Image 1 (cartoon, one colour):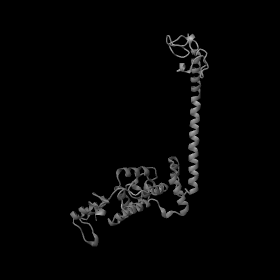
Image 2 (cartoon, one colour):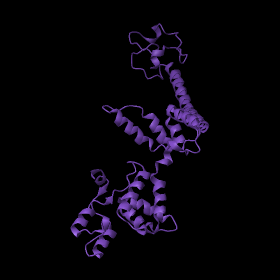
Image 3 (cartoon, one colour):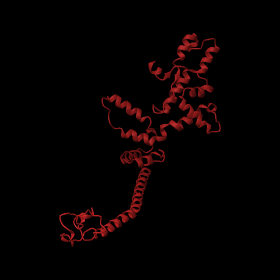
Image 4 (cartoon, one colour):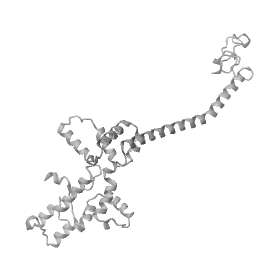
Length: 296
C-alpha cells in the first residue's frame, strides 16, 4: 500500500477518534471484528488525505480520491464537508472562508459539500483555462533528454487530462483554432484569446480577436509616436533658432568668444583674419562668412 500512503499524512479525523473513545477504545473493522486501541491508533496515523494542490493533478482527480477515502473511512454523510475542510492547508481554508463570507451563509462550516465544491472549482478548476491548456499541450512537442517512449506517452496522457478533448464538437474548427493560437507568437493577442471561454472561442472568433488586438496595438504605438514627435518639435525649433543665432554672432569678431589669435573664419592661429583664404567663404549651415568647422 505504499502508493496509497503517498497520498496520506499523519494525524487524523477528530470524529473517528471520538468514535474510538466512545466505544471504549475499540472500533469496528471489516468483517465485524474489533481492533485494539493500539492497532486503531496506528491505522489512524495513515488516514488523512493531503490538501488540494492546485498545480498537481486535476481537481476531479482529487475529488475521486477523496470519495474513495471517505467511503473507506466510513465518514457519515453529514460530516464529509467538515472532514474535507480539515484536510486543507491553512491558505486554502482561509480562501474558502473568504468566499463563503461573500454569500448568504457567511460561515464556511455551514456550507454543504456541494457548495464547497463550487467554491473550489471556481478557483482551481483548469477547465476555466481550457484554451490555454490545449495551447500548452500542442506547444510542448519536444521529447525530454533521456525520456523513454513509455515515459513520453505517460506525460502526454497526463497533459491531455486538463484539455477536455472529449467535449470537442467540431474537430476541424478546433484544429484550426489551436494551430492559429500556437502560431500567433504575440503575447498581447494570446492574453486576449485566453480570456475567452472555450464555448465562445471558435476559429473565426480567434481570428477576429487577433486582428483587433494587433490593430489596436499598432494604432496605440502610432499615437504615442506622434505625441512624442509633437512634444519634441518645439524643442527642436528652439535648438535650431539658437544655432542660427550663434552663427550670426560668429560673423562678428567682437561678439564671438574666440581665443586670442584664432581666426574666426577657419579657426586656425597661423594668420590674421584679413589674410584668411576663407574670408569670402559661405557656411553651408548658417550661410555666414566662415567654414562649418568653426561652429563645432
